Image 1 (cartoon, rainbow, N blue to C red):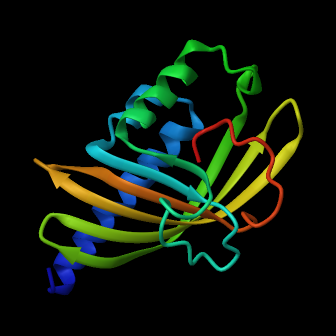
Image 2 (cartoon, rainbow, N blue to C red; image 1 turned 120 degrees about the vertical axis):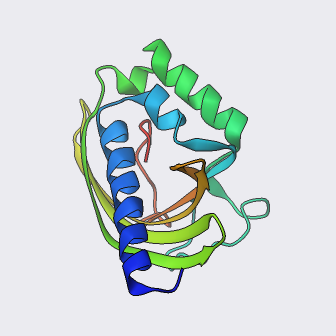
Length: 166
């Protein structure tokens, strides 16, 4: 995919996908969010990496490191309504920006983006900032997430409970 028109079309499709994922997270549409994942999906939020250089979740501390079955379990728990930290549910709104196509190989697309998440909860109002890295893959005509790495800007400090989907 080297022609500029193809890259523009791909960037538009990727942007639409990321915006849809953000909306599903903000609106607590957990089952629809889970459906965005591939069967081999990995969801990772590293810890203690102020510069974002965490490279091995098997050897380094993580805030969250979920394989596909753990993603499914996390969603199932959220759907029970018995997560006391999400009762009542946080009001969320996020902005996704600085979207970049980092690499395109076959049906896989590496994407980088920044995000700002505003969370209003019974505890307080909090703003979360992060750099997200995605591996998206076409399955049929649809993009799906094969991996998502969320590097929180303040992940090297004490962090409030992350009881919502980042």
